[in-house]
Image: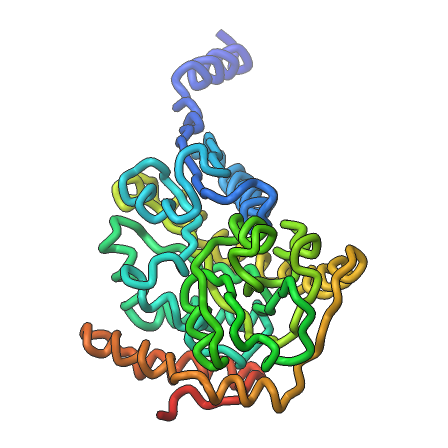
Length: 356
């Protein structure tokens, strides 16, 4: 046998005994939210989060996700996502944290500090950093059999949308005003105003039927849910951006995931956090314009009115911090750190919530 034919034979032998390439492992992931697919954060989970995870996993080819998305109440209602992920009805969920102040008290940090910042990006980053620097937020989700991935801020600022013509904050006196969670406490700074608990998907009917006179929500949501049809007056009070969405993963599901998939989900969750907050800001001005174009009227609240409203409220931030302190968490330190982060980013409120 010549050297040439010996070489061919050796090459053929090596080809037959070569280690086969690793096959791509497919991992199923059921994603749930009770809100419909048209809601901004749900839409961007579909359009941004999922494709970004797929793209990064494809770089190695080791894993691929089989996404099964279930929104709009087919598995859980908006208030049921936390329990749904806890029980394993979904592997990944977009939890609306404002519905769970007793189980997730630390998530209320932005809600208890109104009139500070209308920058969704700054609030999202500050809250998420607090979640990583202090154990409270992650511990709360751990008790619900979940792993915290990232905070989501989907609104630039709460405003007040009214069925009746208003010219100032004082015109809200005696109103029944819908809200979801901690923002109902803001109404304690307005004489005679009564808060009525509801969710975003309920507000249109609540306003249309006269169950409430006004509702606290943000312009992008007002445009999406056609609020101008039933509440044609927006009082621009700039109550502030609030974190209301958190991406979580069922803890039992998480334990079974390969490290590469875990790391990818964690990294993309941070990018989703910033992407979502950026979209909220980008859409804010256009949404306000759309509200006016649809027949709505925007009434500007003066700086004096905002300060008066803020100072008339009970110090809900101090109440929040004490609740956490009493539970063995660092509530006072978390509050100071959060407001410090916002101040460093250029956002100072009309009231110092760290003071009694």
